[in-house]
Length: 104
Image 1 (spheres, helix red, strand yellow):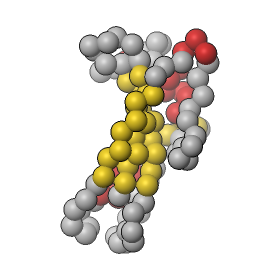
Image 2: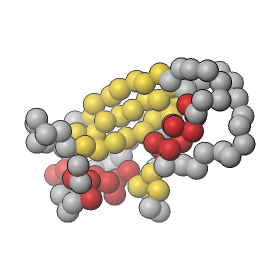
Image 3: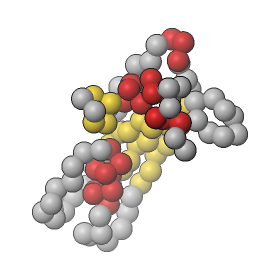
């Protein structure tokens, strides 16, 4: 569970942070890693649906490490956010980079 904060996981965490905050990547962007640390990217598309005002947009903001708006405003249409999440699954023991496309 603490792999990202360990010395082995720290370079992966540093690749997705900018000024100690999670960096937001565009649709075609991805974190840059040195060739020795290159890992496979596993894409997932997550669609969040639910009633108005339940916190879908706040959840996406929290996962992305960006502050959520304090005042409620309705999301018009769909907002797409791309997040990268490095992890080291126990089964494989090799780090991977999850690319999460969050549709809110």
